[in-house]
Length: 178
Image (cartoon, rainbow, N blue to C red; front, side, top):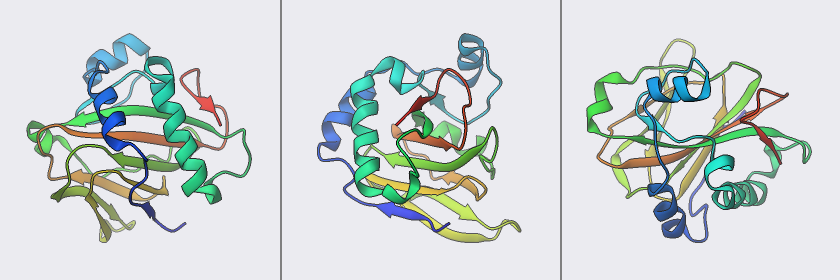
């Protein structure tokens, strides 16, 4: 799969950004305890966006359908969406990883906060050699195959994004279908 990038993804990015800033976020430990899971990531994350702000989730899904039709074979695609925040203090806590688990097919990142060209997501090949560098540009959405190794870098204060995981089959009760 190619790495797909769409700038100007949302019609009203400021509105979505402001709504996401109000959503409670949890550390990995808090999240795992609250949602009875065993996940790991750097930063803080919301509960599933469908549960905390369904209108924002709908807005993301609507725009995904407009801009990335090729990712959806039908209208019954399971996915998970979260708000995710990282600050400078998480610079040393990130790692190269892939999200190829639980039948995850694609990973999407929507950058919500102010553009920072010293920040972004590096995507690597299997030998951990960089393939591409996706810069953190406000209102940019990137999708890539979950098997690609990747890592966030250059965390800045209030680095806020939305993460989307698209699955080939049912995963758990935090998923929704489009």
